[in-house]
Length: 175
Image 1 (cartoon, one colour):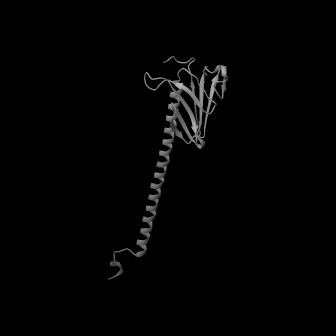
Image 2 (cartoon, one colour):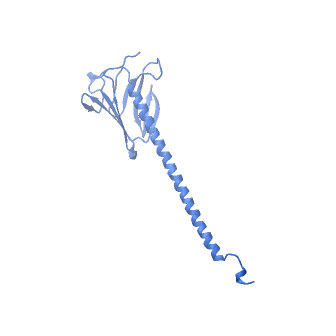
Image 3 (tube, helix red, strand yellow):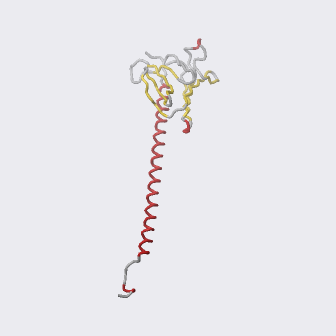
């Protein structure tokens, strides 16, 4: 048999083709790994943003429904009475505080964790044309309400949430 009659591949040709196939496979695996990493980071970010949106919604809803009564704050927590959730119920006391690294809402004394990863909680109150760090500004103004409430929630490296909610001029009438 002559050399021209043989129709196979040499060992070197097979090794080169296997090496090229291995390089293509490694590149494909790296691409899939990269895509899965991006997907995981995106899902985590969406979860964080969803938690932030829920926290802002619940906080704003609570402040929007402040009922008659006192608003009290030392600048790092907020206590007030809001209209009862649902129809016909008695107003309930709501307290927003930071416990450890969690933003917590207490309704009737029962804690409800709202958002994790919180590094700070500050409340300010618009009184006339000036912002105050606590409320009430003096003991004789205990029944007065500020014109607006500003809540700032520190989120560490994720930034800061800030929400300003205007209050009615006088308490809403209710049961």
